[in-house]
Image 1 (tube, rainbow over the protein chains, first blue to last red):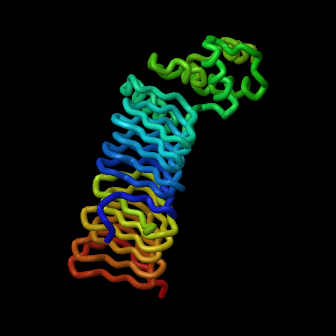
Image 2: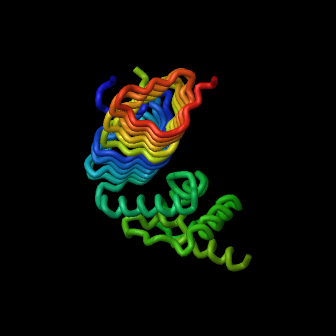
Image 3: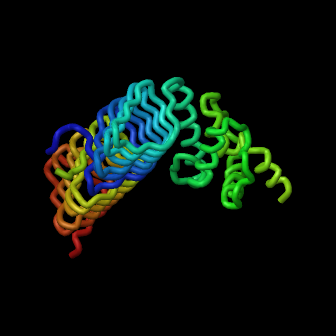
Length: 203
Length: 104
């Protein structure tokens, strides 16, 4: 028998929810949701597409999803990560690829946001994704942040508009958004831009 | 080593698929499909339909099992569900409830 450490081997895939109170090493693939009280290690070549709530996270592979780590996150030089990240200690090595928001402050609020989104998703039977919008929408949201404007500066493309309308329709009445994540909410319905809401009413 | 181990404090709710061996010391609910061996160790709980080359149970397994080569119920093991395998070994002390299909 192998050692006691939990390992998801390179040829193994888990889809669903993983909870535990020990270290876990992923060499294969996990889709869904992960909650560990210890360290999650995502090795090179491994993929985790899940909302992740752990103590320590060490990524050398790929992680797609919202990340909450109560102590630390380390992205090594081979890491590829997409998703918002909340942890008091965040270490990114040269070569790491990351897209998302980093919050080293209010971990509790981030955790609440992640879990409420997970509940929403499971109720809707949706697959986990970092944001309930396609990449284009994420780009638009980023532009808004950069411009520090409350509404998009330019008229959105049809694809973005329809995506937002869909998100606004699905998201109503919308979850309680912690103040630490005001922009995330943009894609979630409750804080959908005014033009998106108008669009719904007109239909 | 490319095997997968699910530690004793780990709870998985969902589906596990793999081309390698899987050792479970914790809890798995859902569905398991592995190309090689599945080992349900003492103290482990599995509530899942299982498909594997060989299945060895020392813990507790609830669900239907298809073992393409061999199903081994060790002493102290408890299994509830239908078992389908060409070779089935039930050790003295094992608990089993369900149908047995050896393809005869």
